[in-house]
Picture 1 (cartoon, helix red, strand yellow):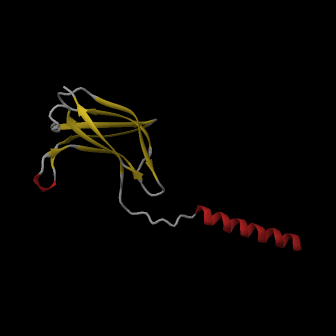
Picture 2 (tube, rainbow, N blue to C red):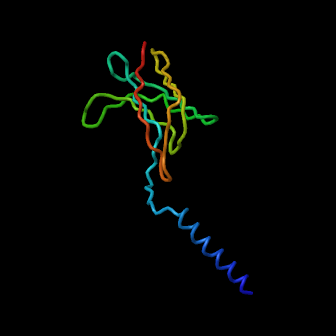
Picture 3 (cartoon, rainbow, N blue to C red):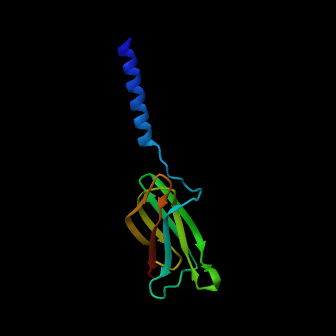
Length: 130
């Protein structure tokens, strides 16, 4: 009987010890974070194209956005074109940006890291060439 009681007690201690290791005390926000932020510009003028499409691949996963038009920046600044992909996804991505009148821009092996709450954004600039 004493052996059974000791085994039960030891199991309770081990379970309690495991719980403290696996339980996170970090408070996650409800924000939705994109892992990829790609600013699209003309390589010579640095102005954005009228529109562009982003394709992000990681293994069998494919995410695409666009074609998206250029937008005015806040406070009446210059126009810009930022494309977002890989919402709350970590991984290694191969990227393609397509825009009318430009050659495709590609990057391979782009890493997106994260933690238990969100992806950590990786920001790149796609400098398009005619």
